[in-house]
Amino acid sequence: MKYRVHISNLSFEIEVEKLEDLSNSIKEGVAAAIVSALPADIDPEPVQNLSEVKYITLEEFNYDWEKAIQHTQNSDVSIIRLQKGKKYRVKEYSTQKLKKDLFIISEGDSELRFGLDNFDQWNPDPSVKQDRYVFDLDTWNSKVAIVNVDLKSAQLVQEVQPFYRGIFKNSPNQNQSGLIALINSNTDMEFGLLYSGGQEEDLTLIQKDVNFEGIIWQELKANNGGGLQVIMDNCHLKQVDPPTYFKKQLKFSKNAVMVNEGSFNQIENTFQGMGNSSNIVFVEGMTFLLPPTTFIRNYHNRYNGDSIDSTNQDLSHYIHPIPSVGEKFLMSRSYDLYGVPIPAMLRNVINWEKLGLDPRPNVVRSLQVGDRLRINGQEYLIKITDRIPGVTFNSEYRFNGQDSYYAQEFKLDKDLPEDIPMLVEVEVLESKGEKLLDGNLHEGYIIFKYNKNWQTNMEVDHGLDYMLASNPFGVLSYNHKEISLWAKNTVHQGFYRQSKSGKGNSKGYTLINCSGFGDQFNPEIPMNESGEMAKKAKDFIDFIMALV
Image (cartoon, rainbow, N blue to C red):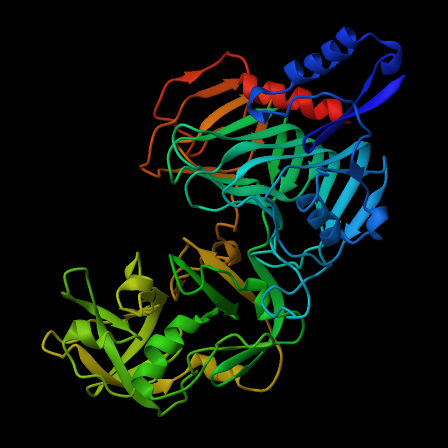
């Protein structure tokens, strides 16, 4: 006969003869056998009786995901059983903080799909629950598993930084340990952003028979030491790059550009206002920087007494004003890292403090190749435009701890006089950008440029591919080298980014019949090509599969 076993908050099935037909010694032997089969760290209470299994279904809770999860966290039930082959949709959800064991299991081919299709992360409806991660493990000794369930994200908006959804996150604080498993799952969701709890006690992450195609698979951080162990058994992981640009019909006003369909949110990203990145418009051979809000608040508003709150208005975006013929304004001579002037170069952003000058109102302009200027009675032609190279592009001037510079540089057709001051007044004699102010639509591109320049040159046609080139958002793995890794029969088809926490040490790296672990993957300790999976992980897998 089949009986169901309930041990503390763990439940599973076994098949034995009817207990009342057995002697007391055999009854006790059955209970002892169950206890001995469990992983040692699960530490069940002594089993005296076999009782009815305790699990719930989403159907019992009228498919209310959060009520079902909270029931498991506030009762002695730890299992949610999904119907074999059934697809479930969780449209709205908030991250569920777990405080006890949770096992979501199916006999096979079940699917959980999370989120609203085409959710606008940049203009979210506050009444809609739509968090990035499904579960928060916090700092407790976690035991969580999802078995035979495909985990899928709702349809994403086409944008450079999509709202990729994740399964697990935890607290960056110390003392996290436990066992987390995803077994037999096709998914496009991130496994997790997870931190170690220390050096000695491991948080063990098990990925077995997983097929992933998505933007980011895992971000594993050993902030508190090397107690973060990753098991990857028979996994195929593939990074899918989001787009970096969009072709648009654009309409210009003097200090704004508008799209007739889509949104500037399509190129919005968390790198805006930090790092070596920029958003630009490229149209008819001309480039326009889309200034981040940090520039407007920390530089433009501060020096011009303006009160612009945001540069991205969804369908329109602020640009540095397109100058008209006859306009006069101030620019800075360009200079090298040591402050030495570059003879034939100008900058459109003036670093008043660096130059030792008293600030004065002066709105930055958008200038283009082919523009003609008058400086100190002499005429000059702009032959090259580009962003300032290196970190000075964004961080030469910082305010409120934020990158706030974002300057462009302009090469003239001849040198400026040596004795000319660092601050010059320019008069516009010809403005190529003025032709865009005709009220008509102009075909062009809005582009996310990450670690790439965007030069326009009167004498060199770089081509459209050069202007559209960018490093896309996302990595397959972004891990600290202090983690420990055991992988077998696993394909890592995407970028592996590695950094260092400086806390603790890795307990070992083993790769058996694996491919794709390249790029920055570079453990500091010798790597093994053979070896068994950690017993704790193997025992947990055996235990979980017995629940199915």
